[in-house]
Length: 383
Image (cartoon, rainbow, N blue to C red; front, side, top):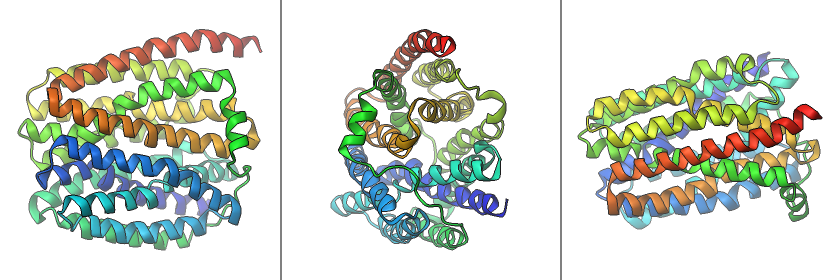
């Protein structure tokens, strides 16, 4: 249980760093006077880096048979680069440091999730009881950063990121190492994994549902500021969004049923549709902030069900590959489409139209997930 408690602390701190990066980088870039197209360009280019960096660090972890030492290296580099990013204002420099941070920080996500699952199984506790602390960290830091920007200025982000990174490094030192049990990620293993028809349809579904989520992640803060919201209000929005995940993750042992994952994804897709269609109608920034409470029924339910379904359909020896592919699809490929296309769309048609169209995409995800549930749900019950 001691290992689980250290990992809970690490989840809190790592996802606090993610809050500063994922949620507030667009706000920081917007405050530097960059248009939505350039914001999308910077974040989309970072997504391209993720496609290469996550498999690379996964292979390094496989090769060296350690997760902890790789995480320590990534944390040290992320802390330094994050500090430099949030003390810069040149477009070229911002683009460069963002690419470096995507290279070092984002590969920590699948490594952390791998540790979460292994530690949960070893200690006979639920995955949600550990991952909940990540949601708490994201929520608390979102609120803290909003107030820090409001009262201490944008440059306070650099000191916050570097400080949290240093503490994360110290906590990671106390974590027990976990050898990588999956096969190394190779082109052959990827071909075998991706050649399965059910896997292909499942990944297509994840992409359809993930793109609207990633567009919202990138442009919510920018949209709020355009409606007249302050950085403090942006922090409150992300606090409500991330805070609403806490109970969902904590109770995942109760609601996350094996064999029902596709139906659960359909449930979350319906609320994605409601959330984004309402976002396209709202003109008052405070109302948009309160709407983020619908995160309760969207991301934590969608992502937990997706991970469980993946682990159920992927052969055990390919789980490491499958986890990496899922992370690449959600944070890499969908993030690239969301940033490039979303930035252009926002600049050309505005936030209201952008949110209307991603609500339509979420509705398509709802229909698609219901179809797959009807096909593969019956198949699993028959088996």
